[in-house]
Image 1 (cartoon, helix red, strand yellow):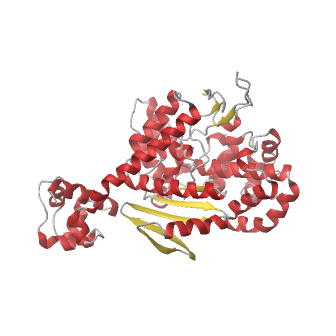
Image 2: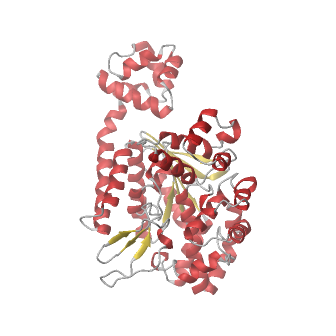
Image 3: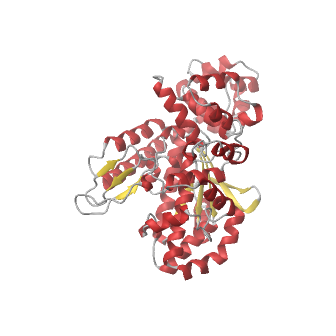
Length: 471
């Protein structure tokens, strides 16, 4: 064990435990400077301190002495390289050998920012799980902050494309980005010069909203595959299982080195979709849920029987807000799932004349206006925007009030008073990618309802009440 390897290992263990150098030193009866010297490779702890250090860092003494993290470094690098090789292959397959700059730039941003070995370990496991799902005809959706990135979308782990609104030709791979459109689902139908109907996609989700929370991922799927996924995790090397809170029949699967938490949950909406696909012999991947009649029915609140959009609160908001397009429907989904953004907040702002498009409904609605204002001031780093977003989404401004310095900075950026006051009433903020996914699911279910009504109602009479109870 050399001092450099030990220092790197100690830094990683301390960071995973969420300890500062000063706090770790206090727990050991030492100063933070001593810990700093260890991590920099300038000195080593005395042998008498090592058992206590191992205990505080939640590792065995043997693992601490052997720098177990260093032993896994090659494996972690291998997983990282395999992940990006798969992503690069998916990019070439979808966008051709010379993808547009927007695609390349987004991927390079993620490649540079996503450095945590735990992320690549999680993606490696989820990639294996997807192979299992594909081989058995099932599907699953992964939720967690890091799955809002472009790379997991390319690998089929999340159906929401975070790129700006664009057209895409599946035949000749032509791409056309549309600057004045918020959401690609709102683009009018278009035919490629090669004669192929173009896909409409892209939901304008910035990469910067990915926060550095623990690597925690949930797998949402139907009941049958949920059991298969649980068994898959249970038999995976290094996994330890603990019951989920309030559900003794479901389990977290924790991996300590690197630290990842996973669990699989059967979700009524996934079970119902699975049965609709089987009952109609029509995969949800092949339907045109952007058809004009689908969106029109949703905009008119004709949502009876649908998950999420069919709930009374959602229908009331649709009737009150009168959305005109998919982007505004997704905004309403965010309002229904966030806490503290509608009553005594967004509703009053809407009544006062603030447009629906400007209301805060998700984390990106906080981050993006602040980031854009900072860009206009010539800023190139947007840490303040992330900090405000995090404080709002965790309800810190509601509990503790907004500091005078934060308010002064927001006013200096020329953000309106109503926007700042809205943040101070927020208890919790939904992710935009989840708002898009939930709204997309409603459109898929509406397609089955309009095209196969008998099968739809046969399935939904079993699952609708359970779906409503989950929301």
